[in-house]
Length: 156
Image (tube, rainbow, N blue to C red):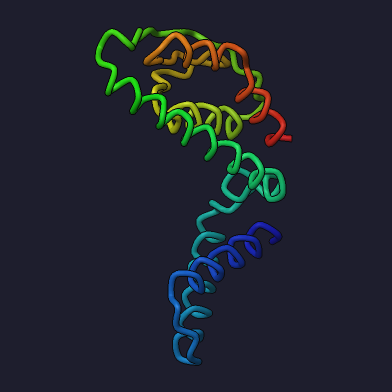
């Protein structure tokens, strides 16, 4: 029931942020829609700890801020290398070990790598990730394990 309440709260907040209209009619549409969607999700048995990871509620915003900074830095690096030409890149595929304990943690880690320009997660098998890196520096950044440690902290 806690997960259904969390889903309802998130849906309501999403509606309010995107609507911009707070008249009684629109708010009543929101309430009816949120109750209907929460009911359907509950009946379909898709609301659980994996779909509503409440344990991430307080730890994920700090990680997002760090990830945004990393994305900006990587964007600047990739743009610089585009200007410098093909001699400035050294593409490679590396295998790295992930220390996450849950599937959700592994997915957050793999997606974070892909979101960062210059790196793409190609495959995820068990606790091993195959990653394409545009440069040796990008590969070295992953090998140091900073992102892995931060995702593990978020995971709990």
